[in-house]
Image 1 (cartoon, helix red, strand yellow):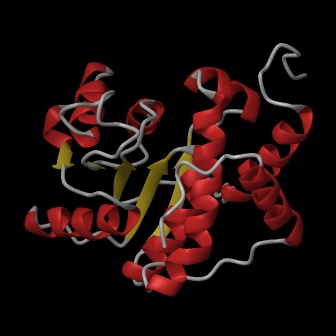
Image 2 (spheres, rainbow, N blue to C red; image 1 turned 180 degrees about the horizontal axis):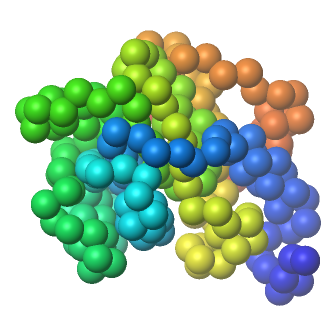
Length: 222
């Protein structure tokens, strides 16, 4: 049940939940040759990657990400660097982690991680993409376009929407990010860096509703 003290209106929450559900791919986690932890403002990605490593899902892990306006103050040395340190603190051996500290978008996350793996002599046939829950669809579509020969499995921390909002502690940021990610699902294929994904009418309507309510700080300026 929702916390009645939440700043979001019921309609905002309902529309955000529709987009939240759409963004998740609902893949069943299974072993892969390597994992790629996609950098963001959410340190839970690194924690969940560590959990999956300890459960034996992959032998090697790449953390990828430089900085964005959302993360520059939180992770001043870059997303990937902070994620790596957090995972090591959770018991992941430093020797199994590769670092990609330059990517500034999802396309670069995939392309630069692939290059880091190649330099390390790794040519995986399957990759477990570990991301924020609402980044699954965008990362899947991007990887399918830029690395089509690889098997892509998406994974994220198994949190309900309300629990995720509480874990981040900034509802407006989360809704801005949900809206921004959906815009990227639509626009990235036009830029040639993702495959097209069908967006149901009710999800598109939810997107337009939240845009009209001002949740637009993470939109691409195109």
